[in-house]
Image 1 (cartoon, rainbow over the protein chains, first blue to last red):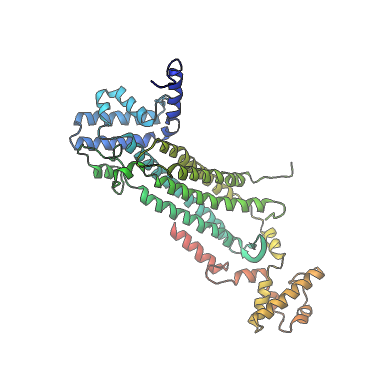
Image 2 (cartoon, chains in turn red, purple):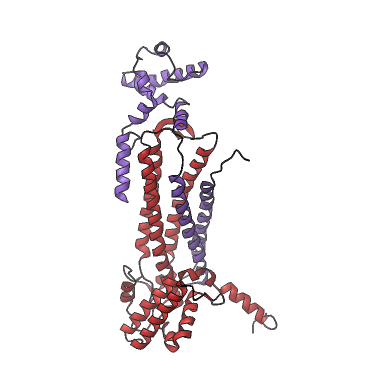
Length: 265
Length: 177
């Protein structure tokens, strides 16, 4: 028995549960969690690991949960440990034993790695599209100012005359590189860890290539340890975002300077 | 302070940049000592990457409208360019193109600028006689050579501010999108 057991046990348990829980922030991946589970169940049935009836119950049940969350009919349970447990518990509540078979040949370790990758795929696409939109605004503005003379600076001292278009387009090229970095990170993001299991795969005859294809990945991650413990894609995307923010921040700094009475341009 | 109009959006973008650097540090630090394979530490990845993603999206969504509605004070820009002897390089280049060795041209221009400062003038307002006191290579066409528009528009080297180069850049950017 732990030293701190006894009359504090209940209180400690609750605190540890709160500390352990991630549903307050991982619930935003509900859609990706459900889509991953649908692909997993589809593959399990194809490999004769679960029955067609169970597969149908699971897929219908998951689609119902997805629909209910999006329609606002199903709220996340803040006492659930994470989004994966929440969805699975809700599924089992709805369809009974078939729900308990969904997690066959899978671990939360590969499930969460899959969810983040699916989630980030969508987010990277949105960041790319927003960046593209900003570059378009910059191009339109530059087009209007190809003859607008402004001072070009070095050491924040007026150095040589340039045009405002030239100045704006410098930011256009920075943002274009940001898009290239995100696209490049996406290439390595787009591999599927599902089927890595807890760390060492599984004895079930799963088909990892099939789930990767169902989820539109370029292929499965080839090493199960790497599949569950790699977070390079988070680092690469965060790094690309940090560099893009640095560009926006430099631009912001100039706008702040230009707005001052000392500049007033 | 009723006289002030603060560039709040730009300041917020600048401020939030630090937060995103923090997210990157969180992720790098989280990973650096983790033995293979999964460890519970990795649950910390989500708040950091979610925050970075949310922040950059928010900033991009506010930045484009801010730029789109910005009022460019062209006259003030021009006036700012007209101060500070920004065309001194072009004055030296003018002399060089007429055969004066570059170092000599640079020195003559430096003396002219010093003369202007001492007499409250600019290169545009110097008389031709004043120019010719420093070098008889100067003639009437110096005024066109140091005109700010000439200075910017004739910098037609690849990637420069001349109109042809701006068009090239615009085309390259638009094609890349």
